[in-house]
Image (cartoon, rainbow, N blue to C red):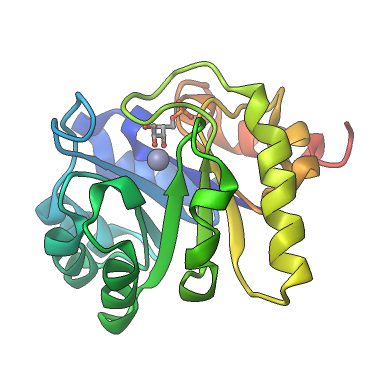
Length: 218
Ligand code: DX5
Ligand code: ZN
């Protein structure tokens, strides 16, 4: 299991310290939520910020694009230092072409699946992706309640990937904390995003430790 703290819940006035704190607390990746005020009603981070983040951490940058034109902007985020790029297929005219572009620019490509989108809608992209991002909240804000109904879809995605011999990671994002992470990992998620579940706790190392301990105990 990889843990990817989402900096959206960090203290932006101390972003470098926050990033280095989760890095030394044992985070595996850093999740960066990019929102444009169009696809979602919130505005967050652009490529210039990713470029600055890239300079202060060695963690892989997992950039989640919640924007209307990822085909246009994905290359800028990759040039800024993104290692993984997730897109929402409903935001692209040709999701397959955007995913290919992400790989051509040297990053790993991922498709994000909203809680109300069935797996069948995204199965066609499986051969062209390195990861599937299962949203366990609706995109737009940190600190929302985890949607339990997504768990069987996580299990189905993991099963299908295995049955087809594909090497695609399953990531889960939204409302995950130490008290429900066990269920998410048992359902089949391999990369766990957590924003408020980590940054709103006093001791990041203790929280990440609790998360690792919780896995396998449910
Ligand atoms: C939601 C974002 C999530 C979110 C995670 O739109 O994609 O990454 O910030 O934050 P928590 O863990 O607080 O739900
Ligand atoms: Zn996210």
